[in-house]
Length: 438
Image (cartoon, rainbow, N blue to C red; front, side, top):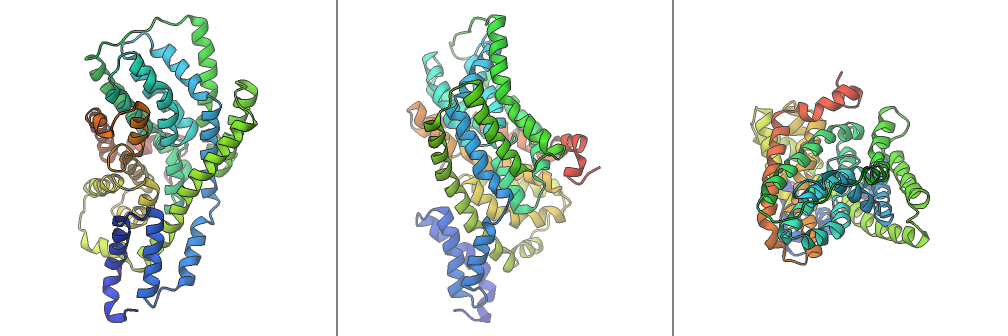
């Protein structure tokens, strides 16, 4: 072990070891745990018992129960073929316009975001149907992949959002407040993507669908709106105090089962088991990364890294500070999954944000969005990888149109940073007590 004379290097050593393990190809979750365990052997003040205790405490959270339950709801929605209902509904609305399937892609992602809370589920579920359909109608494959990947990012912004649940648990920020604050930014992302669609499809020779009969429109509206009612039930229930976010996740699962077994009759026992199995695999990866991030976050606090940053960074303007932090999170999000990234950066940046007078809900939305954009930026770019695989093309072929969508999304992010009321206005109006404003 290193003695007191070397205590000053431990904060740098902690991050150096993490970077080393990641560079060696060790998964992020294991790298976080290994970096923390390494400090047990280097620092006599850090004991193995404290590390294990913090790892346990990282999972001992009632709020985090919502993560696997919302994942299960999203998988059940996919297995119940609700995506098909949403696409049919959106196509009947946008079919008469040029570039219908591109707009349907964005519209379904907005609706699916309120159902699953997961961008990867959106990218896989919506992409599996719409990318082949867009290719058949003459859309260039890189464009079909790009619009699918970009629109799937909305899944972690519009509630219910798994990322917002984790952010709220990590920073003690109101999850209900984050849910409400994410609605307008999510819709603005959708509008920016509609605008990019309009610019792109003007260059393509794609068909315009015949207007659907009114009976078909009403039938699809019933099926689509039944599925899209999930976020209304969740937000409404949390707002009036009927249930907590974790209980809301259970309601989402029960509602998905009701739609699948009773309304649409597309679910059976085998599909429920497949959805449950997929949920266990995905939830174990997500939650284990939080275990590692919990102990790593404890060491960040133990070594007083946030006060060191506050002493070294002198940015008096909260808008400029938030832009700088967003740039850092955008960079980190390009090569790290958003959950472990936010588990590292949220406790690191939150004291800086609060000291500058930035509202924690506003900061939370900016953080979730900035890290979420990494889903479409290589080398991580998980949603872009999923969509590219469905489209059968190399990831780099879709980078051109993806960057155009990303530019519009960055403009929205900048607007949200500069004008906090975009995020705080709706919760201030509907439920000011959720964000500490009246």
